Length: 170
Image (cartoon, helix red, strand yellow):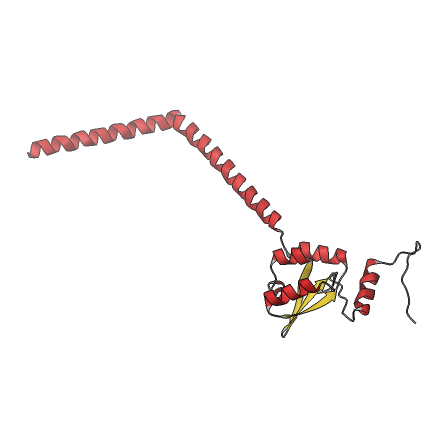
């Protein structure tokens, strides 16, 4: 006898809806929270495509790539993924919340990458600005002026000695 899981208000849980969808379509249901995702499978589809189609490659067996989806009837996505990867795509049903969490965990969106690069660039610019200010302060320090003066005088004296010695040889 089949038991329906309904809460006090008559609502069915997200996982029960996904399980029923999988059963109706004769597909597997996967609980992504407890599923160990195959990193080789994950590397077959770009982050851009994962975000575009709202899918996550989770396993690879022979010529079959198992892809977690909330809408396994999206034949356009399945066909596109087949063409991109060369693998036969096997959709598995997951909940929307599990899929969102897994996509966020295993991928980085382009926005996050761009934001990280901008932060690094800003930090580098700030460091360069601070360095330039420190260099100017160092150049103005009395000890630096004294050392520069001594070096300059030594170079002039050495040039003078060199010129005198050349005149004597002539």
